[in-house]
Length: 371
Image 1 (tube, rainbow, N blue to C red):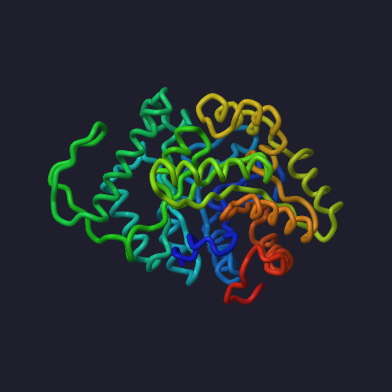
Image 2 (cartoon, one colour):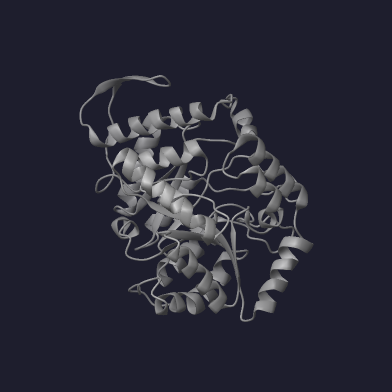
C-alpha cells in the first residue's frame, strides 16, 4: 500500500487531524468531533472500506484556548497508528513525530514496531516544531532561528535512517545527540516507510525536498498551488536528484445542494466559530511558524475558523469533485480532507464524490465497495 501511495498513478486522498478534538474546525457547536478512540476506529474502518488511501494524525500536547480550548484532547499519533493498522487491511497510517520532543533511538524503535504491526503500511510525518507554548510545556527552549530547528530535524532523521539501514552497534557524534554503542532492531517491515514533511516555509520545503517522499504544503488554491508544485519538485530534482509528491490539505463541506453546504458552513464556521481560539491559533502561526505568509494570515481568518486555514471544498458533489480535479490538474499528487463529522460526511463523500472523481479520471477505482 505504501508503494501505491507514492506511485503517482492518480490523486491520493487522506484524512487529516481526526485524532484531535474538533478536527480542523474551530467551532463551538455541541456536536463537534470528539476524536475518541471509538471515533477514530469507526473512521479508519470506513476509510479502509471505501478506498481512502491514508490517515494523517497530528501531535499536540496543549489546546489553543478559547471557549472550547481547541485541540484540547488529542490521541497520541504513534500509539494510534499502531492500533489503527492492527484494525485495517489497506489503509496507510502516518505517525507524526516532533523531533524536539522524541529521542531518535526511541522513535526508531517505536516506528519500526508500528510498521511491523501494519506489515508495511506505516508512514512517518517528521515535524521540526514551531508551537512555543508546547516547547514551554516541555521545558525546552524554542530555537529562535528557523534554520536551527531544521538542522536538528535533519540530524534526527539522519540518525533514525541510519538505525533502520545500518546493522551493528556504533557511535554517533552529532551537534544535538552523542550516542554510544547504539543499535536498533527490529527494522521497518519492508524498507523505509514513506516520509512526509509539512514544508511550507523556505527551510521546510528544502528539508522536505531533501528527505521526504511527500511534501505536505499549505497553498491558497489550485492557482498558486501549481507554482508551488513546480518549485518543490524542481528543487528536489535539481538540488537532490530526488522525486517527490506534493500533497495539500483541504476541508470539505459537501451537501446535496450548494445552498445546504453554504448554510452549514456559515452555521459552524461563522455563527458558532470559537473566535478567541482562532485568533490564538493565528497569532501563534504568525509569531512562530512560517507555514503561512502574513498576507495569508490576514486574508484567511474565516478559513482558520472553518478548517485551520486550509483550502475549502464547499458545495455539491459535482462542485467538490470539480475543485479536487483542479488540484490534480495543478500537479498535486494527493490531498487530505477534514470534515466536521468525519464519519457521516465521509460516508456521503465516498458515495457521491469518489465515483465522480473516477469518472473524471482523477482517481482510479479501488478494489473496494463504497459504503
